[in-house]
Image 1 (cartoon, rainbow, N blue to C red):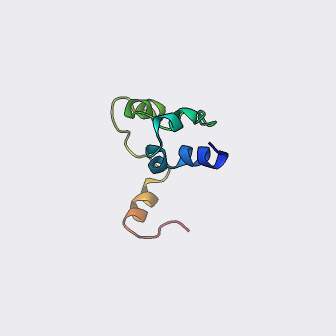
Image 2 (cartoon, rainbow, N blue to C red):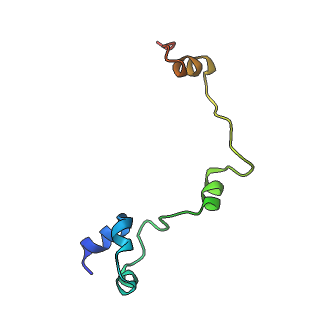
Length: 74
């Protein structure tokens, strides 16, 4: 398998799904490590354990005005 094919297999899920089991076995592990996370792993990595965290802001008035499409900040 060429380097181009290996990189394409890492980056293109549709291409990867068309590979035979023998071809998939030839693909080395992605150098960046794990590419896909389960929902549970994603929750753990994001810090969301008991549910969503309410959005925060450093200047609530400006955020509210921005959401209403008004300009408040200079």
